[in-house]
Image 1 (spheres, rainbow over the protein chains, first blue to last red):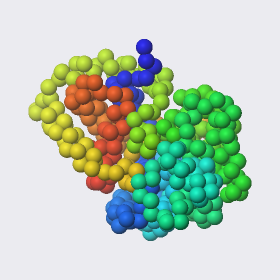
Image 2 (cartoon, rainbow over the protein chains, first blue to last red):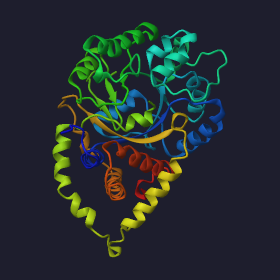
Image 3 (tube, chains in turn red, orange):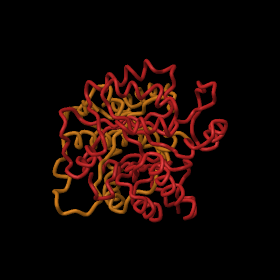
Image 4 (cartoon, each protein chain N blue to C red):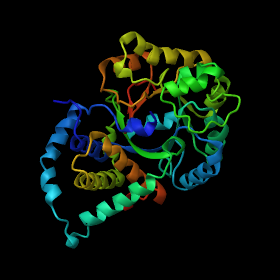
Amino acid sequence: MSDTPTFAEHAAELERLYATRPLIRAVNFHSTSRAKADQYDRELAHYSESFSSVNQDELDDYLVTGKWHKPKPGLIISIYEGYRNGYDVLLPLVEKHGFVGWFFVITGFINAPVKDQLPFALSHDIDMLTREYPDGRYALTWDELRIIDRKHVIACHSRSHTELALLPRAEREEEIIGSQQEFKKHLGHPVRTFVSLLGPAYGQDKLTDELVAKAGYDFVVSNFRIQRIHAERT
Amino acid sequence: MNRRKALATIGLTAFSGVAWSLTRLRLLPAKLKQASSPATGTPSNQAIEDRLRRDLASRSQRINSEEGIAMFLACEDLVPDTSHEPAKVALTAMNTSLASAFERNADAWQRMHPDAQYGDVAQIVEVLAYRDFTNGEAAEGL
């Protein structure tokens, strides 16, 4: 007998979450190609009419109190993987429309030499539909991340975009704790938010939970939840 | 695997959720057979299914890896702390409308797909979020 919940069980669990937990909206971007910049501009303009930005302190307060203190509901703009076009194309639009970008970064992608970035992406489930950079650099640089870090959120999306539950402890430590050490080294501080491939929630895998807590992350983002797991508030 | 694919394979539900789910599951067969009543002012099952099919079809044209995918996230404070009131005291009308809309559409999905898979729920959430985002915080229109 399979341990995977049925559709009905999963639907019922999600319905319970929606009925009983404070809610927040998110829009998840991945690669944001230059060819679609006008579309992103229109969408963000539309969102800005109804929603407001969310930073980590505001999220923390919302998670603790369940109360949102801005006139318009919060919208988290999530930008996954660490694509270069997140900086070149989307970031200026995010700022133009007054939002905070949440950059979920795969550190192995950032650290890959330029010549290896495309192969890294293709072998680590990082979609590369549009290949718009003739110089072959598809990932953000640490310099760009330091600039983003001044006004936006840098978050950890593991080191190699791997399903953590399948890894032995030592490799999982590298994905969760090792990547946090890289953020400390290059940004000068730890990052507060973690999400892994397939987005399991905190509480669904004991070893991953232990390592996420040990690495000092405050928030775990998963497919349908944001969880506050650490009490230290800034 | 992109984010959209990942949404189709999320992990196991928490124990409390499963317990709650089992409670609801006992009601599901009866609900599936239940004909909607025009007298209640609620949409008919057919109307819910037609709208769901339309919205799914419109969303299927997207290239997910280069689109912004709307989503709702439930917020949970797992830190034991007695210095504040539980967040549940601040639940809003959005909770009711989203949970209700999700239930209607999940039931519709199961009528349309008797072999519905566990990961299919992500498609329903995306449709509801798309409606909400399109209308701009109009959860009552879900």
